[in-house]
Length: 295
Image (cartoon, rainbow, N blue to C red; front, side, top):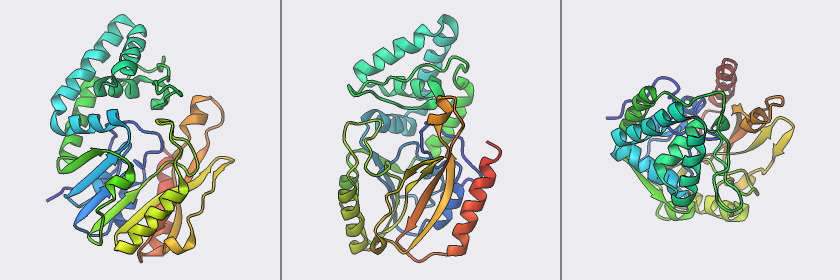
């Protein structure tokens, strides 16, 4: 039996676009199916709330998937690897961060990856056109204390103990989806190049996959287009593909924060391909805004 958290869960992997603050509300719409699938796992904010033990999660970023598997299978080692790097950072100074970054860009080591995400500016995972991690160190923050992170890692290791993690394209993950599956979809913004790969996220391919999922009877919830301040990511899902739509505030833009400009609120559309309570969706939006008022 799964124990569902009552409140927001502290992330083990920091991730831009995370659904951390709205996961408890969104999880109320997870249909009671036999299997949970999440093909764009990122920071995995929904996993502790899924209430379906049998689960598959995937991403196209190898170091991310490797890290998830390490957290699942070797949590104490993950905690110790972070502690070793963090203590060197405190003792030696900022040069350690850039040594680890150089090492990661050569090897794509998942423990280096975790350290970088916890000590870089605003936790922004960012790669250049050569596939190299290029974010700088956050000079005013030393990174999460290793004792605290160890507790977070152990908690997450429990949450994901039944999850199978795969490194592959979302279509491969969804290839055998059927009417017994619930799928949570949180893809990159439509028509954009991912910060982690050189491949553009193709909307037509994605819409075709959504249509196929509808055909086989799988149930899904999709967080997709939206706004960040004055910027619009307006890629309206074709009407024939979904049954309900609402909007939620999912956070504040880490990009405007890192640029030290006014912080833009991020709102995303949420789509459902099954019947659900529209009035409850309004509460999702209301609660999300209230939570972020204190962040």
